[in-house]
Image (spheres, rainbow, N blue to C red):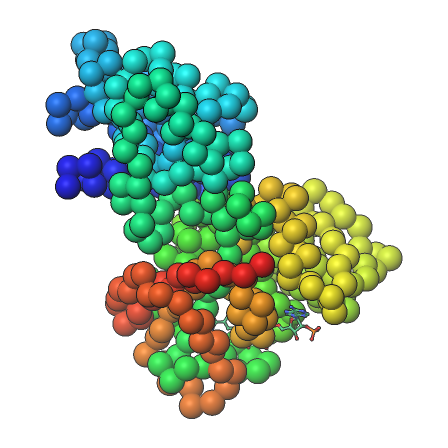
Length: 349
Ligand SMILES: NC(=O)c1ccc[n+]([C@@H]2O[C@H](COP(=O)([O-])OP(=O)(O)OC[C@H]3O[C@@H](n4cnc5c(N)ncnc54)[C@H](OP(=O)(O)O)[C@@H]3O)[C@@H](O)[C@H]2O)c1
Ligand SMILES: [Zn+2]
């Protein structure tokens, strides 16, 4: 039980790195001596020190002698290779930490259990899997990215209580202010947002995080025939945008905030797009609609979670909302709206 409490603290710390560590994992660490926390840290920014390093650096002078008698809790298996920073397994051995508790293994090919093996071979007691089967682990994004070689995919939409997602050709406001703020906070945690052509035309969304702080993700729009006008908010240069098309127009000049990628729309478009995003280090993406675009992800079954806002609005008719089949991992009220998170336990590729 105490292991779980310290691990949940690691998860909370890990999430403080949301939006700034990608494509590295969010990781939190806590150092505990005799039931007392003597150090805490998290991976704060891509390329900067790992959670374990920050945790040990936070130990006060008075407690430093206790490090070699303490237990290190880490939300993800410690790394064992020198990448942008030195291996955390070396640090743990150097500091003679006798016990390490982790939630999940790091599926990065260079690690994948080797971190645990190195520690055990050197006599460190390693307990693995503490809270590891909980939904929404901070390491989920990274582990999907490195093991499936595609971004972690969240399907997100709002629907009326009678199951509609919109009306063709006109914008309908569904969610209340709480849901909007939460949706914007969620956007900041992802690297990219994708929408379909009709949504871009009908809703003209900004796809920024203006109701929350933090960076706005890369805005991606599908535009097979290059029909979207340059006046859309997506193209206002306030955040980067990527147009996925079959054929660029002669006037389509890439700039610092606008890029184009040409892909075949009739042959594995979404898989090829995910490959492209993987190559460009985009480790997570929200698919924000519309119904057609989300349904195509469902058809080929590449998605990891669905965030569904259900609002009290009754539309009577319109565009039917998709019905992702997943395991419910969370459900809560946001004033009059409900947010349910489903996890896809049988992803495909
Ligand atoms: N309630 C919500 O959360 C929410 C969110 C977003 C949008 N909406 C509403 O949803 C409506 C738009 O939804 P929608 O279902 O009509 O359209 P949509 O998903 O926005 O766009 C569909 C179009 O995008 C292109 N496309 C998408 N995926 C593709 C794929 N895998 N391969 C090839 N082309 C692909 C196709 O364009 P082409 O036909 O040109 O090839 C397709 O017709 C709007 O009314 C909007 O207000 C609601
Ligand atoms: Zn590390």
